[in-house]
Image 1 (tube, rainbow, N blue to C red):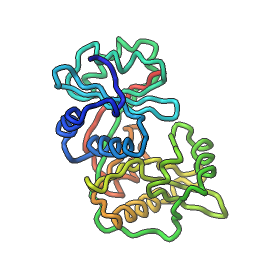
Image 2: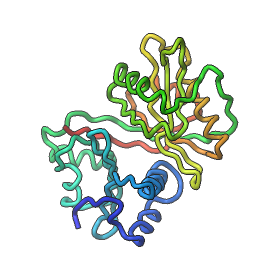
Image 3: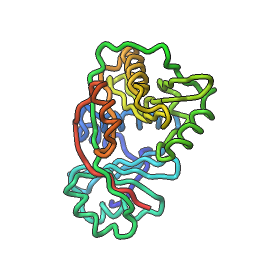
Image 4: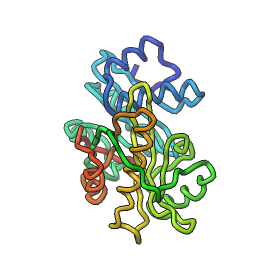
Length: 258
């Protein structure tokens, strides 16, 4: 079927096949593992399309008025259309080759194209910075205002506070923050993100302090590897990630649709 289905509609055999297709290391196995965990908690916001000949797969998530789809392997035209003919604004995460194929078909829906980078690191021994404070549910409104004010493109959701989330706070004001977006203790991997420093405090090493503290907290909780997703044009952030030990694991293209 050339349709996206909620994760809850998949059979046990289909879920097992997806796990084998994705492997055991990196962002995508982590994504699927946390999707299964969320489903057990009653959160069914993932979408899946398995190619008819099982040579390709689409993994999607719906959040904050946006749909994001990662397209893997080989899919036919009808299966690809299932991802870009939907009404909600969305993102397609694809290879450079597939991006070139899709551009003419996307037409005026395509509003931006970004070169994506998935970077990973081994956490190892890290030292926490005492100036970094772990955020809790009590900080929800303050964090939401911080992201909305300084970079509305960042998607911050309250559920992110279920995992380690740290900030540098001075006189009650958040100066820099970052957190965990997904985590699997079974796999020993975490996806981190939402790095943001207040514009007037950039260039002072705050993001590095938050990042090291976040990684240190993950290491104490038995997580051995971390991953993040950034873009080629995010030069300042990439410098921070390099200092934290991240290296390029995979390159791709993000196609933003209105």
